[in-house]
Length: 127
Image 1 (cartoon, rainbow, N blue to C red):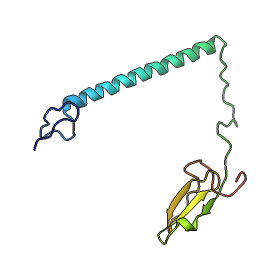
Image 2 (image 1 turned 180 degrees about the vertical axis):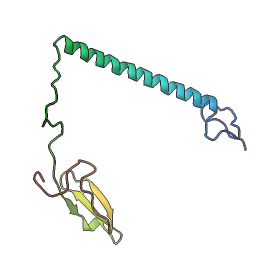
Image 3 (image 1 turned 30 degrees about the vertical axis):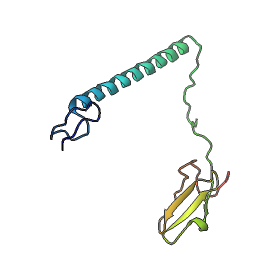
Image 4 (image 1 turned 135 degrees about the horizontal axis):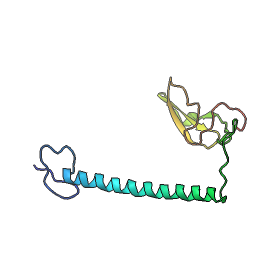
């Protein structure tokens, strides 16, 4: 039973370890490279436009100062145990901030942060 390339239908050899032939692999790599070059050029155009705007005084980029923070305010919450969704092998908990449910195998610790909203699970302020 011979295998054929998923992309062009050409018969694959025993050396081909994927579902596409070498020519198609090269073509895909070239397409990806072209896409990345186009994306890179677009980013450089945006950077050049920002630099020009800043040099013309149309854009002010504030310098970073010691003590500045660029993070959102920390959100706190707690894991609320849901016994009706737990069993002998695992426990189910719900985030008090966003209601995301997690399953924790018995014997393992609950996460210190909600994977959905990022709330710190310490039951502190902002709960």
